[in-house]
Length: 111
Length: 112
Image 1 (cartoon, rainbow over the protein chains, first blue to last red):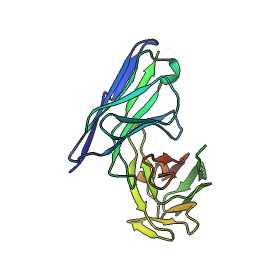
Image 2 (image 1 turned 60 degrees about the horizontal axis):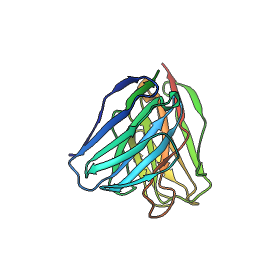
Image 3 (image 1 turned 90 degrees about the horizontal axis):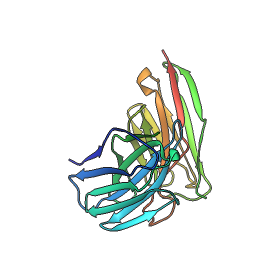
Image 4 (image 1 turned 30 degrees about the vertical axis):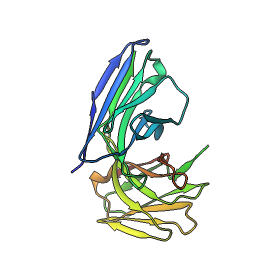
């Protein structure tokens, strides 16, 4: 069966520091991969999605970037965090767009 | 920009009552997905709808894909305390697109 792992679960980082969040999927090949951000009490904002290795589409301009170095690995990064980057970050995978399955999320607090 | 509007934004109901929430879009969808999110967790897929007019059930949950393909509703019958959470609709905004957009969410509180 397919599983998705996302880490770390929580992170506190100072303003201006770099960021790297990792997500891996097991049990499937060539999945669509997604990064979402959720502000407190709000809906999910699609940040990036990828349909294959090295293929990244960005939905909103921002201080973040994404990479997909391997088929089942999706990384969210920043060179210098801003206070406004705080939030709940969720990785998800799907086979096509008929579904998406989420990881447990990373709560990022930028201080 | 793309918008999926959910209503109501929040609901407070007594345990045992039925619940109805809906999702509307200004664009046509080919797939509607309904998710539930518990606090501090990732959303969990409840029901997926793939055809206009489709009515699908999952236990006490029933969802329908609107005939116009611009709306969907989710009903929960005989609510229980563990139904508490935020419910989201979602779907790919364009045919063949690989992005999945989420609605604004409905926060459900069940009073025992």
